[in-house]
Length: 236
Image 1 (cartoon, helix red, strand yellow):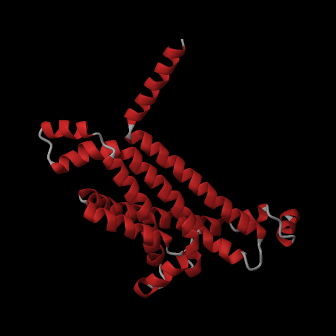
Image 2 (cartoon, rainbow, N blue to C red):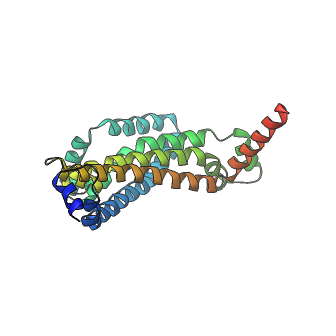
Image 3 (spheres, one colour):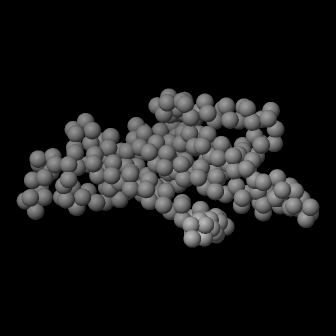
């Protein structure tokens, strides 16, 4: 115990006593970080999907939609939160709304790219079988666009995990709160632990979403296996 307490006194980067004594604080901050990230990405996806459909429908809409989402992504986070402050006050909604706006440029572009990459012959075949626009979208286009869509979700999620820390300026930054609180006194163990947890969250989230992508697109695994088999056969 004396050695553990000593690492706090000497302000070491790695300190087991800090992890033991602040475990609940670390857990609460991590849960808040996950909650803000998940809500932001889900809402961003719900907003981005109709925007991508609108952009695909006509070039007249594509320019404004892609331009607006790009402009939003270039706005500095502090300026974004300041602009949203009169609407949401110092609340979690302020952070979530800002993160949703930042995620749109990634999600809209990936969804649009996935839908536009669907082979024309696949759409024509579905129309020949009597598929209407809605059924064509949900049963043909969306499944074939899933790899690009999930790639966008993965990028947006990792980006949102990083940007969530900025919410610490209003006390809604998850692990960013711990980093912000520790910087003035340069509390090394807290800075390092919170930073490492942010990185771990990003890695775990990306791996989980990759697993979901593989489950939703089993044909890509079959294609990869066939490609590998063809390569081996040619080598032989």
